[in-house]
Length: 317
Image 1: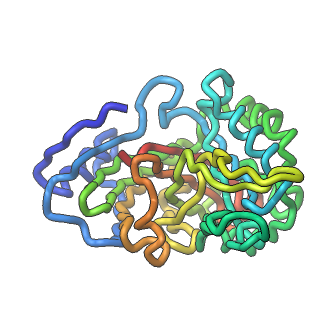
Image 2: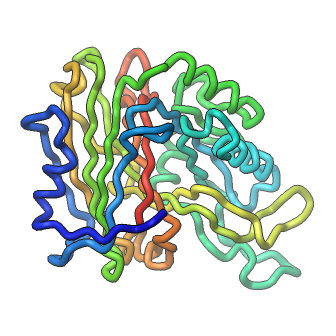
């Protein structure tokens, strides 16, 4: 991607720009996990407005639950890689997250291997919270739009493509859209992101929905148990690193928005790569990081608890 240097008058101008469709007075929620610099951002990126990656296209959230000590997990990683490959017609409909969690993600020392083996912790607060919330005990299974919760929540990797295909077929257009605009201050390692959520149809007023926003990092080469061996140069894709809200519970969307056709809610959030995950974020490669956002139903929704309605992803820089 070619980067653009962006200069604009103020942060408010960025927020207004992000909400310039047909919405005159969008609801705005602001939260800062890091203080924004007073200088102009170094880079800016936005959700695609046209083409296969457009935010107006329905997208499925695919979560690969795994860990570097899970010797059965590599086939699932390969299945995920095949799904997001450009040659796959479904790739533009998929937002993939590799979620390292549980004891399989523990840092450990293995006799006969160098000290660097399995020495990095790729788990995060949000991932471990989801481990408990969804009682994830099956590896390398995954969640596809967190559908059918709490029963039949998990899908074996060999069925991911068919499950995604069925969801895409059943959802020719998204019921919710997420338009993201982000700005990146590289020297200070801080990003600011505006999330504009629009409900294309009205949902029952007694159902609650939330927006979750996380940071993922692509192309991490590190140790991975693989069958009866250990691979010291395994390619980990789209690894969950942390959440804007830290604990992965998401930000509540007002019912007045979700129960209204074209109801729109705009939220501005920041992420500090020096302080995130108790300082672990300082070692992340920002050039390989993306923002993933998804809208999902609360556990109190009678019809589809926890189900993801739409996902979106843009590059940090």
